[in-house]
Image (cartoon, rainbow, N blue to C red; front, side, top):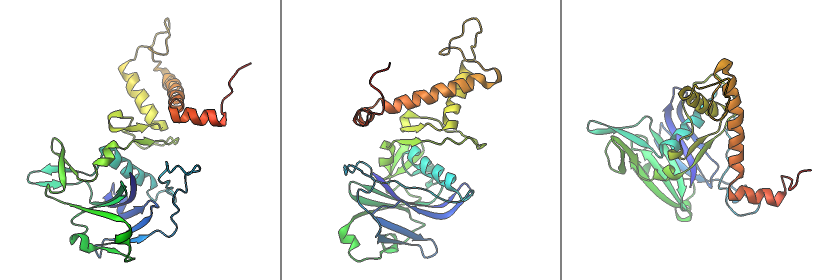
Length: 274
């Protein structure tokens, strides 16, 4: 699965009518005034560029670059939330479905480009989508999925939530969030394995530690035990727990089969100690 394009009408008072391409074979450009989505071929796309051994295990690598304050972190939160929620979700309110934001999402799955859009953005459906080159419709496979206030093109997700068809593939997509920054932003996210979401950022790890230590404030000077006793004095215990948790996360990244193969091939670690 590859996320190719993501357009949002608004998000957290920072993003207003902004679209993002991720460097796939195709480039998408949505004009909200004309209500038109233009699709063209990416002339700079190189198949397998990020695969050194040409095994095509890496589909894409995208860098988000910009000055401070332009909304890079906000966009990553929007993208992270899309994967965390496992698709585009709408909430039933009385007799209609409402969404947090109206958006266009293009996913490439099993060689098919799924163009998923809110009906208010492209009211004429496929007629609002144009191709810059005539042969694109023959060269690539497309599926168009429109959603709006009705339950068509949706299925019930949980309770009063409905999910747009075609986006359920995100539920089976793992997301790893890493950031070594320590800022003053309120961080309410942490690792949730049932969502396949793993937060190994500095604040993510500290959030887990803080939650766990509040549940077990059992520090004892007479019987110190790092596994069962937490030192809450002067936040010393939190820092100590952070160092241990960070080390555990590093070890976890090295114990899977693929990592072992890479380590053995390149000889990163010594086989004997003197």
